[in-house]
Amino acid sequence: MIVRKSPAEVERMAVAGKVVADLHEVLRESLRPGMSTADLDEIAEREVRSRGAVPSFKGYRGFPATLCVSVNHQIVHGIPSPDVVLREGDLVKIDAGAIVDGYHGDSAVTWVVGDGDVPPAVRDLVERTRAALWSGLRQARAGRRLTDISAAVESHALAHGYGVVREYVGHGIGRALHEDPQVPNYGRPGRGPKLSPGLVLAVEPMFNLGAPETRLLDDGWTVVTADGELSSHWEHTVAITPDGPWILTARSDEPAWPSVDDRLAPGGAVPHVDAPGRR
Ligand code: MG
Ligand code: MG
Image 1: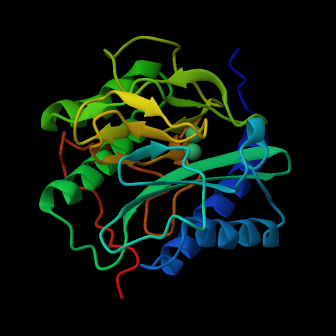
Image 2: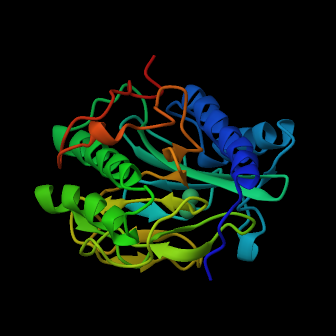
């Protein structure tokens, strides 16, 4: 069942989204080689709670932390640990959620740890997955259909031969972290429910440098690429409004209201983001 939100509820969700956006900016500034993923999690929980919010993931089906932190061939749902120490050139995927006033925000990023000196193929994977996210977000408009988002996302993977993760997908979001509908990162356009104002979605492409297949580690959470290749994950929470897509988790260097005319070609450039943690 799809739960549409009133304009007042969307406004409240924007408050939760802003907490998540601000958190990501703090984490990006903090990120450096030698930190453990548990260090990141500690900062995150403190930041979320200091903003009067509650971590979305902690306790969700027993998940033990504020963040999911997934490194290199880990795709999603990595559990922060003092034993996982980040090194120069690692790809770290940070997924964060926060609850304010009963409403969730959910957003994920892929940063290169350190000075960003990674092979072009790795940099491209990250930037193209990010471009795919933004193409999907730009389809989040009244009158379009759900899989218009899916197809726009997938076009970037098809253009470059990346494996698109199929077992894990985007989702509706609101009072629950995961609501209907599911938002796949693949598929033909023009299908699924018609998009209309009040629908709020988490769009989250996961692209692999190799094959799409995944494997679940023995910890019951961490999802990795079956072939051990690198993976990238980006996510935003977007509300469909009469005025277009409102990116509720947009960080300060990103547009909260992407223009419809600003559509990206597959593999097209996105607003440049300096390598996080570069110093
Ligand atoms: Mg997420
Ligand atoms: Mg999500």
